[in-house]
Length: 183
Image (cartoon, rainbow, N blue to C red; front, side):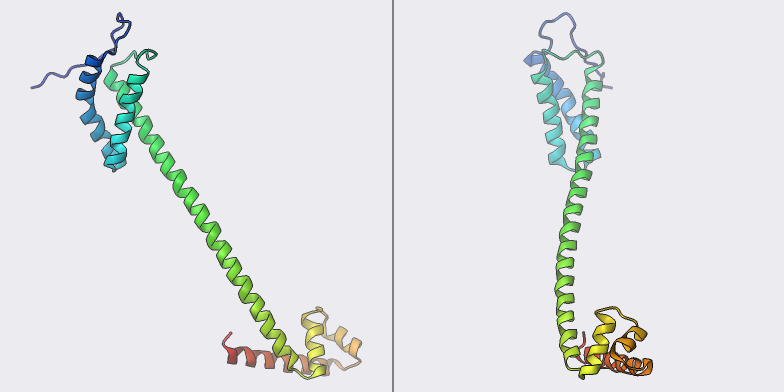
């Protein structure tokens, strides 16, 4: 059975992490840290990059670091933090992409819907222009101006039944034309 070695910072040495000790740490912890990251990230390239960055940071900050725990615990804790950061960044990136995609799809749909509505309005205006003059006037006063049947009857000096007949005729004509055009 292999004896497990614990690594601690050498407190009495001014430069505790020399190249020899760093290589020993690297050789000892790199494979397990890499496996740990791969397990949690499911991406070898990203895992390799995280572990390399951990050791690079350890080397670059060797003169400022004071590690009061087993260096293995320190490295695994640092790896865990990097894994959490990776997953958080992935979530933010997915949300950003979803937001951009939603925005552009809504913009495209809104533009498409506006074009369709404008074309439909234009077609309805052409169909309304084909109505007889009195029928057209009643329809426009009702739909465009928002007047009630009794208000239209008073304005045009027509009976309510006549206004209703003109409006019914206009709506029937519009429905027939729209069905024929498959709008």
